[in-house]
Length: 362
Image (cartoon, rainbow, N blue to C red):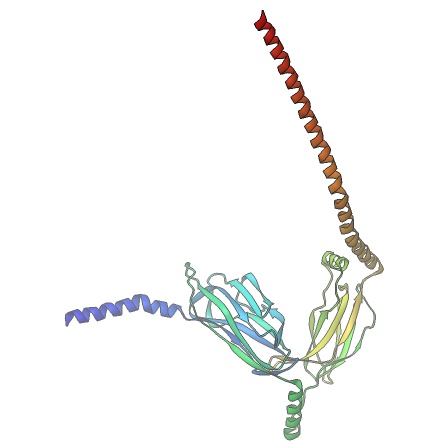
C-alpha cells in the first residue's frame, strides 16, 4: 500500500515538473482575423494575421499563409502596427502563398491579439475562399529558441457574384427602404500629364465617405525605361491615396510633381469602414510622359541594348577563327623548333660517335 502511494506521488511530481510546463509552453497560436464573412466580386477585404501568446513572451514568428489564388488576388501587404521589429523574410505573395519570418526584440511579445501583418485581398471570382497555414513556428524568448506553437488557425469567407449581390440589394432596398452606397466615379482629370508636373482628379461618390484611389502602372517597360526609372530614384511613384468626400459626395486629388512616367489605371474604391471592405467604382487611364530629352535617352539606350549583343556576337564569330589560327601558328612554330632540336641532337650524337671511333682506333 505504501509503495502505491509513493508511486502515485512520484508520477504527480514528474507531471508537475515536466508535463505541465510543456503543456503551459505550448499555448501560442497564429490565426486570422476576418471582419466579414461575405463579399462581392471586385470588393476588397483586409484580413489580419495575428499571434496569441498569453503564457510567455515570444521573440520570433515564421510561417506560410495559403490562399486560393484563383478566387482572390493579394493587392497589398501592410506591416503597419506589427509587433515585429525586424523581418528576416518580408511577407510576399507568390503562387497562392505568403512566406514570412520576423523577430521581436527583447523583452518579446506577450498577449492575445498581436498583429503580424495585414493582407489586402481583392475578390475575383465567386466561391468560398479558404485561408490557412502550410506551416508555422513561434519561438519563445527563453534563450533556447523553443517552438511553443500550439495551433495554426484558419478562416474563410464567401464571394458572391456581383449580379446576384445587386439583385439582393435591390430587393432589400424595395422592402426596407435601405440606402444603397454610391460607387465612386472619376468625372474630371488632367488629359495631358508631364512627369515634371502634377495632375488632378475629380469625382463623385458616397456623401461624407472615404474614397481610395489606386494607381496601377500597366505599361510594358523597355530596357531604356527600366534603366531610366532605376536612375530616377528621387521621382515620386503613383501608388494609392485616400481622399474624403464632401457632404455632396464630391472628391478631388492633386498629385505631387516629378512623377515616374507610365500608363496608369486610376480606380476609385468606396471604403466601407464598418466592414473593412473596399468596393471598386469607375476609373480612368492616365498617361504620364517623360520630357523630350529623357525620351531621346531612352531610345538611345534601347538602340544600344540591341547593338551591343549584335556587336558582341560579331566579335565572337570573328575572334574564334582568328584566335584558332593564331594558336595553330604558334603550335606549328613550336613543333618546328622541336624538330630542329631533334635534328641538332642527332647530329651531335653522330659527331660524338665518330669522335669515339677515332679515339678507339688510336
